[in-house]
Image (cartoon, rainbow, N blue to C red):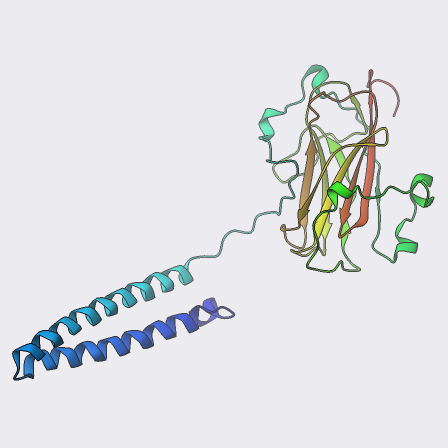
Length: 270
């Protein structure tokens, strides 16, 4: 019991409630004695009413102690993977099985770029020229930078490689990832691993098509320090020809960038 409740306010709360129970019991007992022993009828009636009030208060406090203790004894919730979600609600996975031209996927492995968390001058390493050139480096759109973080970015914070697929497994891993997809209407998932995050940071995701922003979002991070996560994109107009990219930002810092192509024929070499 002590181990289970350590590090919480529950022991103090239960102790305070028990102290109140003791006080109300003592007053109830005193009122009962007064109701029995007072030689005056008026005083006996007043004592009886007082006894009823304190008895009711005592019973209420005892019930509160029982409920609080029962809550404290509940088994901890099972450890489930943290899920980083994007764009309103998570879609049901079985609704997006790849069929026909909806989500044809090439068998090539995805190639993504991870931006490390060293100082800004060293953060963009082993990346395409578009990122190393300050004039071409992507910037976080203002509409997706509207929330102030309450927790600072850590040097060890990282967002892993991004993989694109039209289906993900139950443990949020990409199924048949690729970097070339056919035109059409389908949901595209971007999966990644994250580490050394903290609730209270802010994160943003930005989808671009041929360099132009087409979707994104900005949230307070509330998914724990590490685990698998994914975001998804399902444009109303369907995926059009061209290059799409996804940027993941944490506290205003670009942490990961990856892209894929949409073509009219996925048989082309990757």
